[in-house]
Amino acid sequence: MRDIFGCPFRSVVFAAEWRTGTVVLLSRGMYESRDFTTMPILADALQDAGCDNEDVLNHCRSTSQVHVRGCWVVDLVLEKQ
Image 1 (cartoon, rainbow, N blue to C red):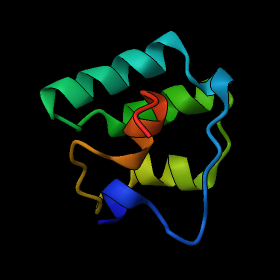
Image 2: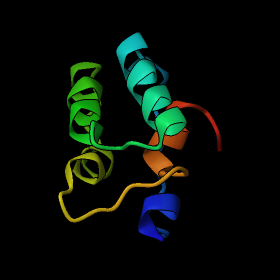
Image 3: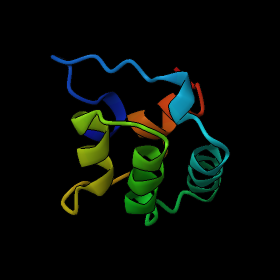
Image 4: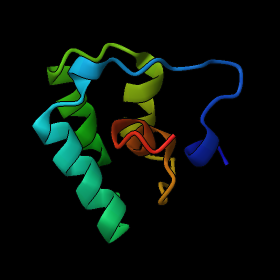
């Protein structure tokens, strides 16, 4: 549930400057293929783009998290919400 809805007690404002070409390509690739193994790479790309939001970065890097289509971070990147 957390992969799709995130933490209900914290809202994340996604800064437009974090939506770089690399971030969008990685997110779109994961969304379309349903293969989320590159989530840690997405975290690195977001950090390179200036993202310092710990909720976003920790979600992408979590090894215990199961990611699925509808992942709140990928949806934020792709502006699906």
